[in-house]
Length: 115
Image (cartoon, rainbow, N blue to C red; front, side, top):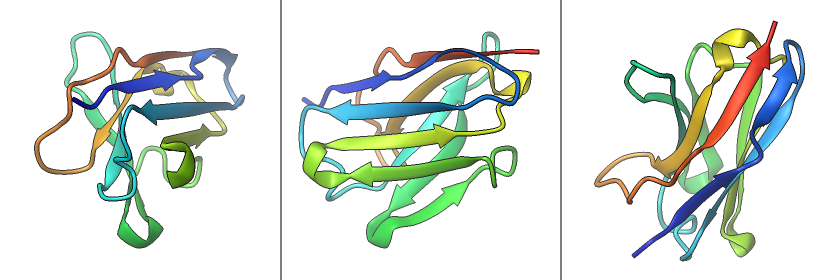
């Protein structure tokens, strides 16, 4: 069973930056397209960014140009660098597969952006 663990969240002022990490218990980043998602209370989890074979990346329009997804396969880790943060980016951030049957969701990491 794959375990995902997100970290790196915190409280930051608008305009600030954070870098999130997603680590996995297995070598999943080599063979799976992976993605970051986020969720706020009362709303459905939404797609943020994905990275797939050949390091092809895709971003939600709301974060394009501000967020950068990357991965280090040797470290079984995926990252989300977030710049120019706004209060609308406040959410719990999760990592999981980009498509197909999801792994069990981790606990996520809280990102709070103050105005």
